[in-house]
Length: 276
Image 1 (cartoon, one colour):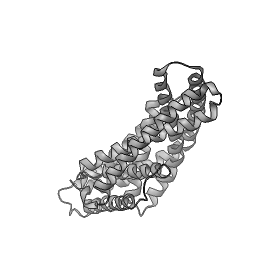
Image 2 (cartoon, one colour; image 1 turned 90 degrees about the vertical axis):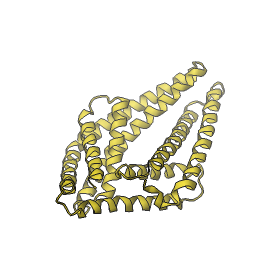
Image 3 (cartoon, helix red, strand yellow; image 1 turned 45 degrees about the vertical axis):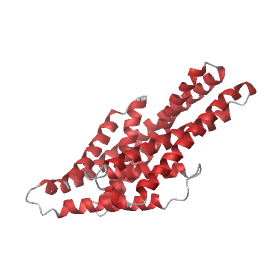
Image 4 (cartoon, helix red, strand yellow; image 1 turned 180 degrees about the vertical axis):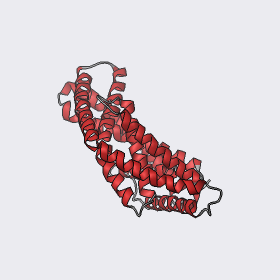
């Protein structure tokens, strides 16, 4: 259907704009926008195959280093935001030390992102344009009233097939625990982005996937903060802050695990629920 292809075209356009706006010391908002756009385009490249997979593979290869670099910056931005939340319990030298270390890491990772973008920009922009051109070539006949509908039907089938495979993988996931919950989230995110391409997707399922994605991500962010803090805060006077972070990690894990198990029980064993 034209709707799916239009969604793909919009995601490709959004990535192009995010790349153009990245410069200097990128703000947390611009990094988040870039990372999200890259993730969505990766999901699109995994579904659409307009040129026997060649352009999809080239695009995925071009954007991977940039996506990884953007992810490192975004992770630090989230960790800094979480660390600042701890200030509500009172300022301390421990928290100041932790924030200073995160700020230094952010500066280093942001510089790496800018370098990666500078080195990869031409390749990314070239592959993005070629892939966009192929998507538009499919989009035009899908929109035409004279079209037989074969192209749009094939596109819908590709999206549905990719989504069904992801649902089956998630439905057959081993019992969730702290060791595999983050990997589960990555697949949940991939399924959510895939369903964003389907105008007939079950809205409740898409919303549930987003909720689980956010909850697991929140837990994992606090877990990363705890690991960093334990490496930095070694004095006995700093144990109070470590204890508070650890308690937050436990709460976030329990909430994320409960939401993920509800999602599996309600949706992920039933591929037919992906439709509205």
